[in-house]
Image (tube, rainbow, N blue to C red; front, top):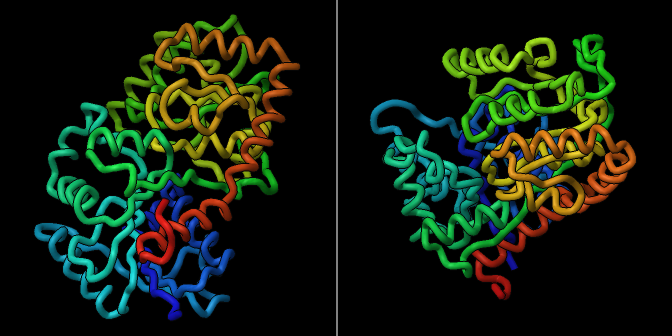
Length: 381
């Protein structure tokens, strides 16, 4: 049997700096597929002239892997132009299958298409209403419903949303939860000396409203006096207005001495923070998966997350699940973990053990089986 040619379209997800969860998905999937070495030839369409260093080795050491630079165009007519360009590339490559890793399925593809759906947050929160009405998003939704042979959803939560909101039948959906290879050496962050308190509550600094950082501040203000420091890492979805509102709320709640923003950190520094933290809180109201939760668990952190949405799938019995939209519930969960070191220690061990189930090789093997289904080469039951 001839080896199929499978084209993976990164759609620009390989470009962002600093790295985000979408980048990790692309990088991990490429390396995972290369490691399991299925009987196929792969071409990755990347957004930079050369592959990113995180996965450049895939193309240097394996003859069945090829990298092509496919930059997106911008401006009026760019959506139509990119669709035409992508169709031409797929024809030229004689692709047997195209896997779109993002929200721009190739509607003119001359081969079967698999699409990854990371989340449907645009359709669940009012602040994204304009994006839902945009032509690119409407085209993506149409293609997902009517053209894609298989849809990969990264959590059962996302799959349920796709079935409910897009009316896509379960028979065309494959749930493949993400994996991680996040463990490794750790390095203290440059501001480690200011983390003077023995008890540290850690969380991402992301000012998207659905991330519910304001809810975490209100919960933290209800915690026992002088209980801990709140350390926020990263810097995502920050606008002048959002940051001004965040600063005003910190001042209003009297938390200025306790809230520390360390900014962007390397993976090694982030691992150090996860291991240094007494509690990792992920207050987000909705996620397609929740990479930070899995990474924190892999480092043995004690995790608090929401009872609903995808992070609850990841955490399971290895952490504390509460309604993070309720500051009282969230504060109580933080207080209990800070006060009960024995329980916190048990949860840390459970978290690390559960994270070991989320391997990149498992994700890659399940993705390969989806390709076989899309190509009609295996039983779809």
